Length: 177
Image 1 (cartoon, helix red, strand yellow):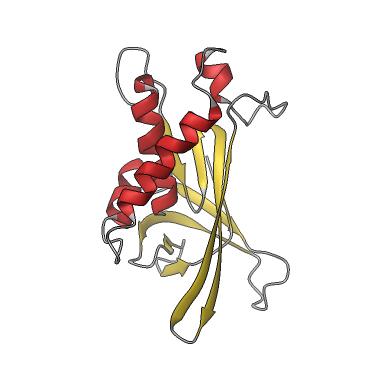
Image 2 (tube, rainbow, N blue to C red):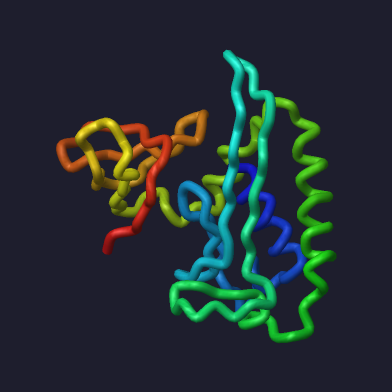
């Protein structure tokens, strides 16, 4: 959650029109790991952890951000399409992010991650359909409802049509209309 928040904050700092102004472009986070500009995907976050017992022994953070590439997918955006070719070099964009990440990791409990993520969410309050991987052992392959909150661990809390609350720890989230 924090990795996505830090990307939004970094991009807002580097490109002020992503946060305010008469020609602002809304930047947001879609659960669990997408960075959106308007309704187009600008990037995504992948996290791989190794755990032994109750101890995290390794975390690998993978980041994909469309900077100078020109995605053919109409559901994707790139910074070059939004701001033109005079972008800062990718190295400087990444350095600004890594500086912010290093400062954020000084808080060993990352207490601010969930509240900060909620501030940028385009998922909460929306009707959603969660598609689960086909290898999921439970019989449930999709879940529909309204995304109402995040748990302290980052699970999406979905209110189903029958009124029950279901925490979802993973899956492909689609906003329904």
